[in-house]
Every structure is written in C-alpha cells, then in structure tokens.
Amino acid sequence: MNETEAVAAAPPTRRSWNGFQSSAALQGFVGASGCWNEDSFADITRIGRFIEGSWAPEPGDREIRPSAAGSWTELIGRPGALALRAASAATRPERRAVLLDFLEMWAGTPFADPAYRFRVGRLAGTTSFTVRDRHGASFGLHLPAARRTLYFEALLPGAEHAPRPEEPLYAADCHRGWGTPEQLLRLVELVRERGPVATDADATLALSGATGLSRPAAALVLAGNCGGGSYYVPFLDAHERATYGFKAAELESAREEMAVLNDDERLALLADVLPDDPADLWEPGGPARVAERIAAAWAEQHGTRPTAPWSTWQAAVALDTEMPAAHLCHLLLDPPNAPLPPGFYLRIWPFAPEHRHLRTAWDVMGRYDAETLADALFTGLTWAYADLPAGDPVRAGAPEAVRHLRRVLAGGDSPARVLRAGVVHGDRGGARWDWLTDGTCDRIMARITADDLPAGRYESDPRACAPDLVADVAETLGLSEDAAALHLQLLTLPVPSDRNVRRWNAWTPARHKAAAAELLAHGLAVEDRRARAGRTLFLPGPWAHAKKPLPPMESWKAPLTGARLSAAGTEVRGIRLSPGTLPELFAEAWRLVRRGQGPKP
Image 1 (cartoon, one colour):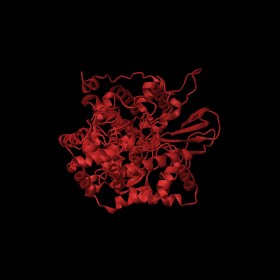
Image 2 (cartoon, rainbow, N blue to C red):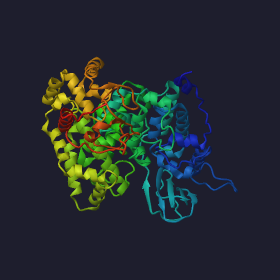
Image 3 (cartoon, rainbow, N blue to C red):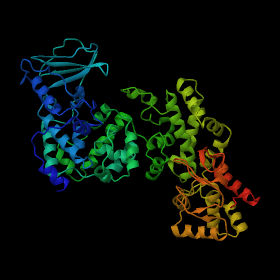
C-alpha cells in the first residue's frame, strides 16, 4: 500500500499518541519537549470544554491545568502552520497521522472558534491557578525549572473581561487567522482522501529567489518544516530526504540557516499562507500561490536578501564553516546587511522593524561569535577569489566585505572591540591580521575588482590569469598549453583534484587525461592513489597527509599554499590564508622550478 492509500484508509477515530510522537510532530512550532504525554490531546479538549462551560471537574479530580507546559497555547489562531506541514508530501507519514489527529481535535475546541478571544502573557507570582465565571476563564501555570509563570485567558463570545486572581505583567491577544473549524476539517478530509500535496520544484525556486533563502531552506519552509528538528536525530528520515531531492548535507545546512527563527516566528510566518479553500492546494499552481504568500510574510518579518547562485551555495556548504552556507554567502553578497547567524549572542525578541538594521552579523557581542564570524569571513574571502568564477555575485562582493570589515574594526563601540579581538586572537589570528594589513589582501581583492577575467573563467586556471606564463612553461618544457597549465596547477594549488581541475579549466575527462599523460611522459608527475586526494596525478617527492578538514598535499608546495607542516614535513597541521595572488604564486612556483629548486623524487 502506498502512502496515499494508507492516509486515505486511516480511521478518523481519535488515537492516543505518546509524548515523543506528539512533540516530534509539532517540533519547530511548539516547544516543551518532554512535557507532552499520551493524554495531552485529550487534556486540550477538556480545557476547551471547561472554557465553554460544557464540562467541570468532579470533586476530587485533579486541578485543571494547561497540559504540555502550556506550550500549545502558542497555536491559538495559528494552526495553519501545522496544517501546511500535515498536507506536505515531505512530512513523514507517522508524523502526518499525529498532525491530522491534532487538527481534527483542535477544530472541535473553542481555540478554533473566531467568536472566542484568547490572550497569553506572564505573571509575576509563582502560584498556579484556574478560575472561571460566566465571562470566561483564566489560568496561571508556574514553571519552576523555567523560572516563569505563564498566563492564559479565554473570553467567551461577547464578554469584556475574564476573572483574574492577579494582574498579569503583560497579556497579548492571540492572532486570529487561517484555521476555522470548517477549514481545518476540510483540510484533514482532503489529505486523507487525496494524499499529501506533491512537492513543487518551481514553487521552491520562486520562494528562494523572492526571499534570499537557499533552495533547500525554501523547500523546508514550503513544507512547513522551517528550522525545527534540532532535538531529533536524524533531522529528516530517508523518505523525507528523497521527497525534498537534496543531499543530506544541503538539508542540514538549510536547517541551520533557518535556526535563526524561534518557534513563535515560524508559527507567525506560516499562520496565514494557506488558501481559504484548502482544496486549492491540490489545484495546478496551488503550491506556487502558497509560496507567494510565504514570500510576502517573510519580507514583512525579515526583509529580502539577494540569492547566491545554486552552485555557489553548494560550494559554500562544502566549506563546512560554523556559519550556515547561506549566511556566509550573504556576508559577501550584501556585507552591511548580512543577517545575524543562529546561535549568536545578540538575541532580542521580538525585533521591531525600525531596528532591523541593527540585527546583522557585525553586531557581535561575544568572543565566540566574533571568532566564528572571522573564521567564516576569511575562509570565504580566499574561497571566493580562487574558487568562484568571474561574474559570480558572491565573488564580486568580496572586496566590499573587506571594506566593511575595516569600517567596523575602525569603530570604537563594543561590537567593534569584540570583533577586533575575534580577528586577531586564536591560532590563526596573527596571520589573519597580517594578511589583512600587509597588502596581501589588497592585492587579492584588486584582482577581483580589476575584472581581468572573462565571465565564467577561474583565477585558478593559469591560462586565464597568467597566459604569458603558461606559454613560457610550454615552450621551455616542450609541453602543450593544456599540460603546461596543469603543471602549474599541480605546483601551486592546494587541492588540484580531478573534479576541481576540470571545473576550473572547463575540461572534459578526455582532455584532462591527455594533459596528464604529457606530464607523466616528461617525468614531471607520477601516478598514484592517495587518501583524500581526489586525483591520481601528483608531483614527485614527499607527501604530507592531513586530517579533515585540512587537505593533504605534496610537501614541496606547502609554502606556496600557506600550509603549515609538522616538523617532519609528513602531515599538514594547518593552512593559512593565501600568501599572494594566484598569478604571483604561479610565477613563484615556475621561478623555483627554473632555478632547479622544484619538486624532486
């Protein structure tokens, strides 16, 4: 039986779900993991009946208290986020079953009835209570571990106030949006009858372009799975990964990208994006219309940002920095407005729109955050220069990122001092500062701004950045232009893997093989298989192994790449920033070879 048939055959009767099943299905929207139990759904129904006056506890029954640490009250007026997840084909079937049961239960409570008014807030006291009169009910729930007391108030239709044993510190009206009882029951019915809504690659692409989110992050958002899952391993199962169609590392980077949102922001983002008639989801263009509404909600919450090219974002994922790939790209695409990455110390919620400009990656307030930013930025600068093609917007933004870094460092405020410490401290701090101030960085950035390379060509291809040098090598050694270029790449570049060389040089495997054969025939290279090298062609001489994420390489070229070797020269212990522009390094490598100081067996 396929999933569609299984969902259609699912009984509409209420089932009991244990705490793990409930909190896993609601993850990313509702917290209080560990506080849900198999009676939580029934408890919510019971509280709804208590509010509307159709049920009261018998003498001796336990006191009425909001279940699941009261976290479910965040869903009032915003069940649309759960409905979107329940309808998505990318939701694992067992979680879909929980969500459908929850939505069906919710539709039968006052929490889905727009005639009721609800408010949530905080209390100063530490006493839990439950009171009710003809106007409504109020609840206080003290959470000792969290050191706070929640306040929840329900007003019956037409009522002006509810009974309050104490005045709350604050109380805010719950949002009222998509999710009337009719809408909820209609969506549940459609999912059970028709199966989930198929993923739409075009809608994902449109959402990515409209918001600046990476494609996998846009896919997660469109499936109602925007950033949750950090408490559950694996974040996605095999069914979900196959449905999304992205690699595991790409989806994990997308999850980290979305982790900047808290539960409340995720609920707010998706609260009102479903169509008035849920059946529109299954119509042609249905997901695309949802994507348009999500894009509008995202722009209202967070503004919009430029989108990195897909191949560039994928390459940024492979860098494996502490900063999510999308945020690293934004550091270079739009330096002054680079978003504050998830986990950074500056966490102020909610963030008023007029102060949104303050919430950037440069407003670091902790040493760890500053070092994370510095590590990602300096890694990104050299990567963008050497490993992205001319015309790539991320590469083109690198010089402005350097200028903005210097402007921030020149300031006298606290973020500037913290960031300066993050740049100059750590095992690479001194080298980073020297690279930034001794002219090396300026010469490398000047190569980008000079715009000497044709669009689509790479600085790592010496035919593009140093054609006269390639001609000299070819003439001196009796090589073709291709073989001469490959020889310079083997001499100079830290990771001249087969895949990289073919990408940089726009070579087919056959053309690459022909150039390699020339070098082997002239005794300029040896053929071998070595761990983590990604190639079979090597310079003659000693080899330095390396542990991830450092690249292994020929010991001879370590000074040209900025690599630091062990005392015996057999292991790469670190790699610094590029010691020069690639034309400079290609020329230096050739100068050493011509002086008889090249690699030797």
